[in-house]
Image (cartoon, rainbow over all chains, first blue to last red; front, side, top):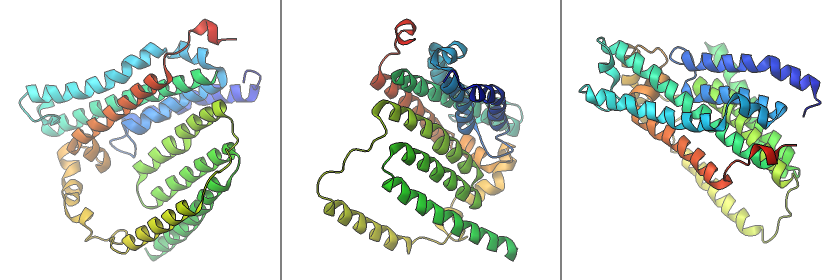
Length: 138
Length: 186
């Protein structure tokens, strides 16, 4: 789709805004609708649009395949680590109350980290699946 | 108050009518590209319906995943297999009978379900009141959906994330390694 100048321009303008909205859904998920899962999908959609118009090699230069492979597992690793840390600190698996002096603050902190790890994994998995399909379609 | 109930009722009728129309159109469309676009419209209508029912989190998910990502993935699959539907073969009577029986059973089952928003429904009287009353106080997170998903039901969410990761691993195993950059490019 290299000759579609309108598409190329619109995508170039839109991608930062879609990505920004994804980050908003991610980090504002405790006050408004949304959370890690939705944010990961929206952020991935930004780069998938970019990939559809600018082609796979261009996108892979921005987000390499090895990178998303690593971060897909990294999200789950962070999630489980938080659970293990709370266990080490003497509470149940994934009971965040011990993460801070104040239990409520601990809960809030734990939820933020968990949502972030979910977002990382979902974003990476969506990009990976897109890469796999797109590579077949070439 | 009465006014808003009426608006919700008309919105429900409008959305459900078009949901049925698009669902039927998906089945009857001969061109698979058209079916995919209709599926996207179906998902968008469904997201609007979730919003009318007050489930904003689900609505965002449906709009992003159902209308966005899955449409793109199906379109890319169509790019590989072509957009012509294969001719239907075989006896159509058995599937029709099965569908009619299942539909009748499901319709019959809806009579036992509590009506929408019924405050005495089992879903509303078990743990929901506890989450609604104590969620914001105990977790400091005003969005109850987030506090349930990420704190009270964190173990379930861990399972979900692992499922997502497993899905990507299966896709890698099925579709194989990425081709080398040099040979694939023009």
